[in-house]
Length: 125
View 1: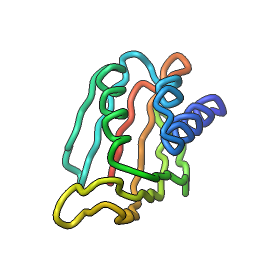
View 2 (view 1 turned 60 degrees about the horizontal axis):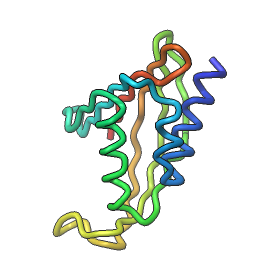
View 3 (view 1 turned 135 degrees about the vertical axis):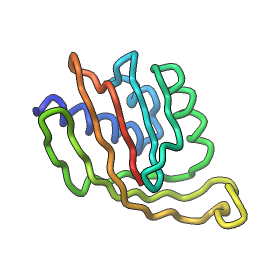
View 4 (view 1 turned 30 degrees about the vertical axis):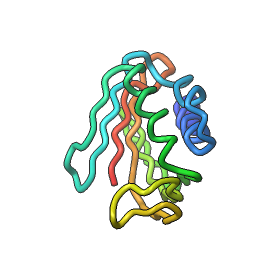
């Protein structure tokens, strides 16, 4: 259990510090990443290379970003991590989302593990 929590914390530390290599260091080569908005799947990535490409692309959108753990629920097959997310936009994303705007969201990430690596992440916002 402690090992999995350390993997989650390392991943989030990498995310918060814009350190993609640190994020990747705890992921399985066959990582599956799914992003859900309003319970609809908006993005699915299979494998570490597509994950890395997406993670590097997203770096260009934010001047600051931070995930803060609010609660961790331990389940038999996974960990459910409730998060507070803040970010400042580096670029205009739409008519409503402009450079300098701050995003404040709550969501959860579900982490699955195998062989001391994260094998799947489901993000919900």
